[in-house]
Image (cartoon, rainbow, N blue to C red; front, side):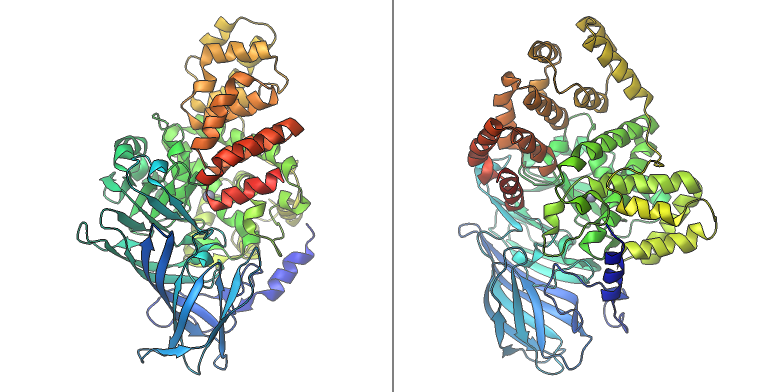
Length: 625
Ligand SMILES: [Zn+2]
């Protein structure tokens, strides 16, 4: 990208003085201009929300009210503008402080497909609170309603929200942009046999009462508000951590996540205290669109990471790391997304290294680089290949890719190598301490890097190198790339077999391979492999039947490339069972790379679509258009 747009973003950034009074001790120095929101943050800024929602599984709606408490930045403002999407607004009321509520006029603008409708509420002079009574639509983008058959237990329905990036507005009229952080209280009313959880403190409630109360004392952006309702039970993992899951999944989940407390201690030892009280995991139904979502205090995790051998728990390290990068210090605008994901991917591997050893961390780093190289060419818009995409007029979700994760992590690894680990660790810890509970821009990061590291160690890293990291559509030539001895051995065994060596030798060499080694082996096999060779591998190692969701995925990608039909029925089953985008999108993309494959992908989607989250439905439809 060109640098002009950074300076435009900076010029648009606004300063909010006088913040930090009242019940919320956190101060907000700035709200960044944001093209993904209608909110008039120059006049009002949300400080606190009070939600009261009743869930109706039959009609697939949430109905109730939200109270929003504001700081007024403009005492003369007479209109409040909120983000909404597909909401039925019944009434709006306004008040000041503890005065009685008074009905006030409102208007819902015509909806646009990406950003929804601006809700304009008349604000009488001095008012600083509104209450909106509303109901969601059965098609709300943030909500996924699952029938009992789509759950593990098959007896009760399930509802969950996924607000990232700009979908909170489809279940809460709100200032739905990442640079506004707020605290909240919530009351959720459910059928008596179900349990409601939110990513917040949970107040004890009478079992079977159907009324659940929550309090979120730390200020968070709207995209981190999260709710799940289902047949859920809890098991403790340690003094500050535990796991929630459907009863039939609970024991396996608790075994898989047994290292959570250790991961917390490991992350704290490098980056400072965990500041959110508890850290719990909630195992979602298989249609959950992400591997995990870092909802504060309560990570939502895909069951696809439960492999029985802790081989995929780097995802827990990742979501936990977001308690620092993303939740404690979050991207001020969506083009700054790499500040959330690049940092988190980097920290995730540092924690994996501490707990599972350098060899495994390096393998995961190399798999990351490989994915970055594979996925970049699939991005149609050149700036999406850089750390500084342009989201003007777009849903940030449309540009979702490996780039902010892996290029961002490589950028930080480069800095670590240049300034050396002890100094870089102190620097990152100080970044979190200095910016805690605030949002930050890429320019904030560069300024901090300059004063805290570059000025103190001049000549180690140049401005030109920083700019190349941010704007390059590829990995800079001066990057510090990971190396792995284990992978070198995998490649030797692979090449010997490809050159006609006996299967027995490959079977012997691979006896003790880890999941990461298997992934590397399959991912680096030639896409032109003969069908006889595919059969030979499948007979020996049973890839098509692999219960490991990550190994199965790379095998299916190879099966599509080589038209290895014996895997197709299982592939179709996989696509029907799993809704995790990072696993299934590449499979749909691979299928769609040939005309007949595209027809087949559309046929599969017709059968699987209902089981996917709305954002995944849209993403795959776009891909197959
Ligand atoms: Zn993440």
